[in-house]
Length: 112
Image 1 (tube, rainbow, N blue to C red):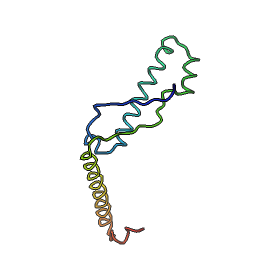
Image 2: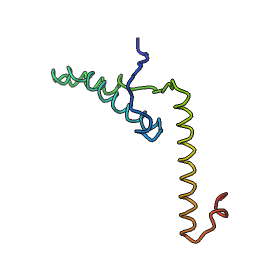
Image 3: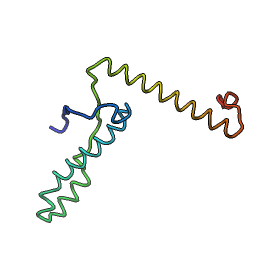
């Protein structure tokens, strides 16, 4: 068997990552792959088996194909949608402010 799923509980709260699943996903991806890779390589490093280490590094059996998050609370999803909307509005306002600082009318540059 080469493919399987894992359920991980007790993940950090969304606000710790600004409601951005990609931030948490990237952190988990790196964390999990590092630990699994170390587990694969550990005994071969101890035995100084360079051939097996080279074989593992080519095959990379520790690679993750995908990470998906399941939400169990609709209120959490609504909150994330609101955070995303506020983040987009903030970025739009920052853009307008920067355009005004440059002496440009932000409404004229909006569609360009």
